[in-house]
Image 1 (tube, rainbow, N blue to C red):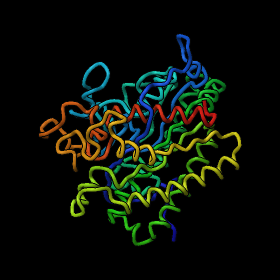
Image 2: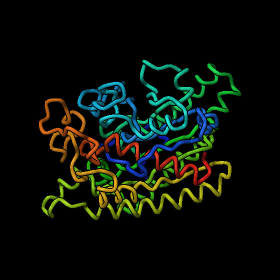
Image 3: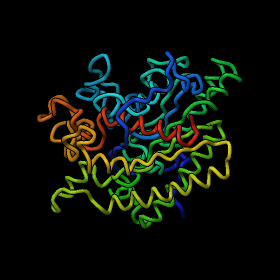
Image 4: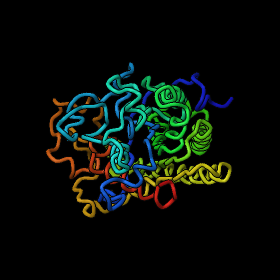
Length: 370
């Protein structure tokens, strides 16, 4: 029988880690020549779904070991070092996107008790580090599955209606830019780690098809709930993450081409799925973010981006540490993360997150989301 997917709470699984979502241009967009942002007037909020590439702190509030609410995480946050639960040395792509659209410079995590519906009316993050499209992926380290992120989205809309009124709440949701980044954990920490058993049920191509079908159901559901502007990120060159390079030391520590090939094939299926969804739902403005190509550009042309190390993370040895292994006691952490593509063995630095955000906004303009 087919595995339980996106909107059932019945899935389970074993083991996970995270990955990186990366892209281009270095200069923050100037959205208009006046004092305010024209886009900021049009986009009332940024709403985020996904995994650790975009989780701004939800995992701090749940019973999981997959956390980053301790130093040196957050050491380069604006205003001084602050470990917020973001997996990086500073801000994540949604934060930069929000700021560029004239909204607050930090997108609050929905489960963070320090924020309320007044904050969430301008931006909210439902993402959870360690999750995936397959609910079995979330079960690995007891994080928030994608179906639960959607349940929080529904709850948020109820709260928003009570706060702003039905008409304004509907306008906020329909006008918001929805940012989705998910999928890496499904492969690296579910399928290839073997613990969930998916590898025995499916070939990797069949598993890709399963994930793409789940992503399609997710996008159709948030459209049904009011989303009209959505960015969906493809997979990065996952074989080039520091952990994968470390596991490939027998072959000289290079990228694992099998994983990169799987990412390319999955991305092609995602693009085709998104095209079909656009045709089916003409009022849905849906942009694909080609993370793979940008990450490859960063890896092969580091000097162009002012990078000196694209093979290891800044934290500790940079080969396998993330989460609790990346801590203040870990030796060898770099002095300047801006010279690195990766902060830890899975996640990009704040500098690269800014590059990614700029590229996402460029794509939104090119494809008519903004």
